[in-house]
Picture 1 (tube, rainbow, N blue to C red):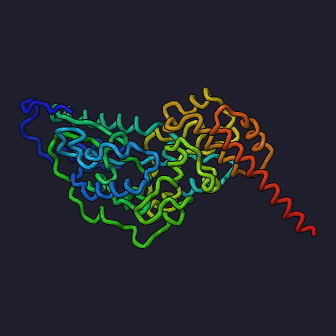
Picture 2 (cartoon, rainbow, N blue to C red; picture 1 turned 30 degrees about the vertical axis):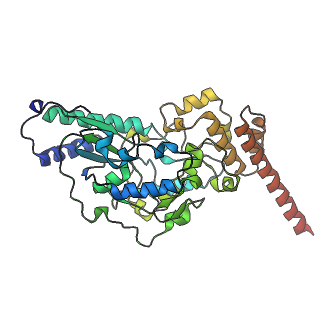
Picture 3 (cartoon, rainbow, N blue to C red; picture 1 turned 45 degrees about the horizontal axis):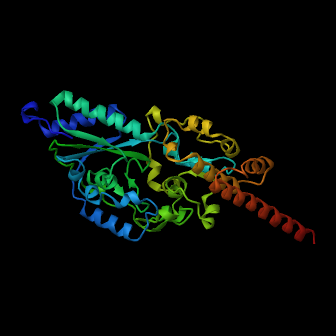
Length: 377
């Protein structure tokens, strides 16, 4: 961000007017809320340091870097005086409908944020449009737009802006919108007054522990404390290693991410469906058959995931995840045939997970046979 010459900027622009116009334009661009964050992140820096020291980030070594920048946006983008924080809803169905899809173990479950266009592209593009509209109104100013793409404590900044509170599952929650939304930021050299924060950013989780109880793998080890090494989103997206054997049955049919902790949150009764067409499901990914996905070759996988957040995983990771889900699927001829077709896959990672899945079905069949024999006796 290169600050413009003072002479290039109009002499008098009322900050309140700037914020009012930004909110109008943000709504037109599909954002559900916009506010300005105060920049005090010291307690969040301390929480991050303690979390990293316990190794709960697993193989995400990039989280260890740029710690000073995470706690000080001015270090990340020199000249930053204000952070504009925004929300954008992404759900194309209700939480109840998503839970119903999760219950069909013949089908793959893809985290609902990844069903449409890659949110990075959508949000960054619209944040830039927002900044350009302001630039046309007040003259040149310095800014950079981000969404989950820089060392920023974006949930903490959104909380500081009054967009919600950080819940026990570590996601941001708003009383009127739940938690099923994306966050984005504009770091700017404009001196905008931080939004006045009242009880909107206070914690309203109370004694509720539904998110902790619903986590399939027990990754929420305490309120506000997530052990990423057990989190299905980490295991199926971030990790390139074998999924731990003791967690594979718990992964179920989740092949890319996990929404359980959010889907059961009572505040998501108020979640709004997205008005942004980019987030509508593509290629039937809201309810795809596991055997169909597992049969795709790498070229078809590339076509399926083009312009999608699913590109965060490699084809090898994709097959690994699907093999686990097929191991947890009902023992049927189509499932067994799909796994047999990948038994000799070139990747040792894929082969090992396919072998595990086939062994699961053999074990299940033996148990069922023993149970039938016991009933006859």
